[in-house]
Image 1 (tube, rainbow, N blue to C red):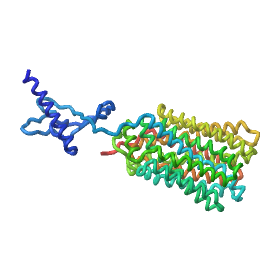
Image 2: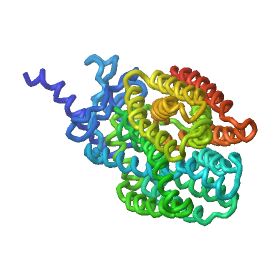
Image 3: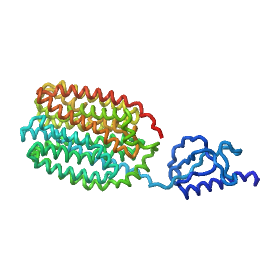
Image 4: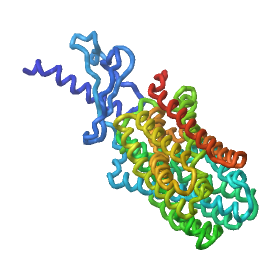
Length: 496
């Protein structure tokens, strides 16, 4: 009995020696029997008492120990030794479910404030025309510059969030928003509004936007990424919906300068205390790594991502989608007033339609987890095109039904493609550099928004109508849906 148990006792001593060596000298290669071929590791077990198990796969051929005592391998008389496992060192405890949802709620609120300030410009546009006598194209310059700055600054924002974390970004963004809004309330010339809104406010809003929160949220909710990003993206829709009627009422009560001062007070009261709910960069990374649940084979870098056709298809999707959206959205209220609708009535109807964007964004984002990112985005593109067709059919103030249909269809899918596109980016290029990669890709979104918002005003100044702009919106949406459908194939595997 003792002789029969001797090999098993030797195996136990050998395994104990391996563990001791590995713990004492983490950089060394374990000696002894090894596999000639590497086998895939099973998924890590989160139920292990010391944390997820880590599979050790030594490389190289069979090696001999002292006096042949540790000899083995595929050619060993005792047979091959299977790869052995050992528990990984204890990691930071996973965040409690409430903590992940609290982070998502804080990101939603911060993004809502920034989106409200950015989208409220559509209501202020008519006030600028009446007060300064600017043309529609001139009044759109600040907004177009803002969209361009937002896109061009995206790589910088992505790099900053990777380095600084969400807390510092929210503090920076809140400070810039407050300064920009107070300065805008005292603007007297077009160049001042272009600088304050187009640069200061836009950069501040970017610091509390998607680029800051998507990398964190996508790791905290790795298994429900589409749902989490859609909830976050719906803040854009909520801010757009709430800003139109609220800004109109505030302008009528306080004037447009007083409305900007009131917005500055709200931003300061909400954003600066809200930053305390976000952890520092290291804490966020630890929580995301513990709660993400998904392993990444090897993180993508920007240099690797930029060499794939999927990167440029995503860039094109962002640009075409923004062109289609902003050829319509910035001038919606102006269009409704031009055809004879009351300004407050038009703001209320279009604002109501914007509220529908919240369930629309959440529904398409969640749906993308089940039917795929491509098909949920195609559905959103189709509904948006129907909404623009309804606007094309409006001829006068008697077309209340068409205005409501336009508000419902266009509003329902405002931003609805965003979760699918952003989640697709996270699916294709996961890793700690997602913020940087996403920042470069979203340059396309800024370019498209700048082109669309300025082009609609220019088209109106030349033709006296928005009809050509709305037709261009339909064409841009159709091309964007085609480009997104071509993203079905993932990038080719990388060497190494």
